[in-house]
Length: 484
Image (cartoon, rainbow, N blue to C red; front, side):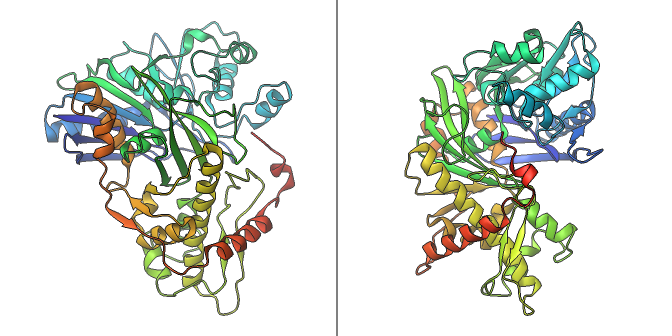
């Protein structure tokens, strides 16, 4: 049996086939880089975006042949509003990175409604204030999964799953219903919200695709990556090192005790919901990971491509005391300092490009250790192994640095984008390809396992790192004062 998976990313959309032996084949992709018309705005053409995704899906089906079901993974919180009758978007989609509603969030926080600009809630209100100030139009809201499924079903289904809805900022803490006070304050009609379905289970037929396969799996990107790396039992943990970095822990059926953010800066997260109930997790966030390597390529010109970072960094055996704090966009977990900025410390006249590149990789690895330590605190679990995917996971030197910084074995995903495999697993669970979560756990087979280098004084390195982070913090005090 085979499953078509459509993965809706920030910079590209992809479609591929997940087979019953957990292999991924027939991949097709399209670049879908968002626009930034002014600083802080991140938006895109929702119609062009979904058209690219459907084109990829049709190309995969043409190359592979019929499939048994469809799974969808997507960038969370990105907000699309469209007219229910015409199916046309009423405004550009606002990406999850869009910060145009920062001021609104500060006002709402003062009123006792803590919302973040990366959540959907204030994005929806911002779009409605522009195109429907009287709230008398029949409009639909959705994240990219909802928007795609609307099109796949010819407008018959307006749905999402709880792993995506949990990022809206419009649900109660338990994730069992909407938060009326938020809907009322932002004047968001409940009628425009999608119906929330289980992450795994039959939803509807994708009637616009050849063979009309049934959509059976939906998940946010990080939750799909968690599942795709077999992290389906309490204490399993993975990190995705892409443009940013997300570290997610599977907790089980009990919601974390903290409502909004834990002592160490992690967030509660719905991992998935199935017929047995909701599985919870925690998420720690690095605001910039691979972005720092892209900076070395596109802005500094020190390397020709991200892949060159490993080669050049290996030309030296250490950074010779150079430390880099990867805070191009501020610091996330555990510091949450939006005013922090990247810092290169300890450079001398003898510092070379190789030292700088190596320091950048080490800095991202040390931030990965920050996330893991924070997750231990906020989950209360002894997290002794770490699975990784994302673009930086293909850099073996970085993986070794991460293992050394965290002090735990690092298991590398056989697929750079484990989101695809996770969405496939969710669809396959619904159709009997896999009989249960034990099968998903057993399917994990890392491409490599990296052990910490013996004899490293990790405690001293971590102390030195903490000093560097402190120096990078509060560079822009007005931004450091923000707290979402």
